[in-house]
Image (cartoon, rainbow, N blue to C red; front, side):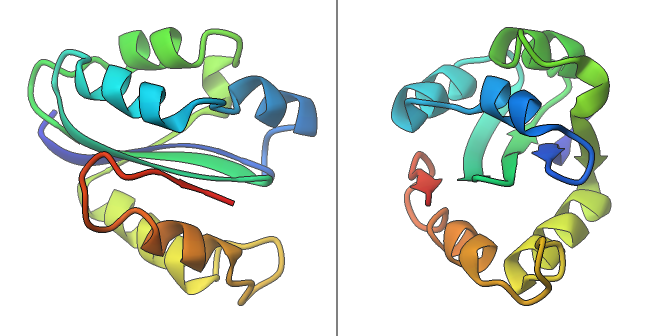
Length: 126
């Protein structure tokens, strides 16, 4: 696997309890740890009360199961959606445009996604 991938836990299929278990408390430490994981070149986190999204630029050494097991040990693996390449970018555009929100057009996700630009290790949380 090479390129951009998305790992996502959303209100659409996960309970509030599942989302709380997946919540990343210290985003800066999480970004540093994720960037040091095998196969990860870049990463960004978009986290709101309704979702946790990881966008990763990965190379052939990346192992999805090992990564999710390390960073989301208390979350059932079937609750973590996995998008690759074009599908991952399409998902990001739907998220940033508000089409993937609980309320279509809601701008919380847009602001979160905008906050991920610039510095590769920049965090975004609302």
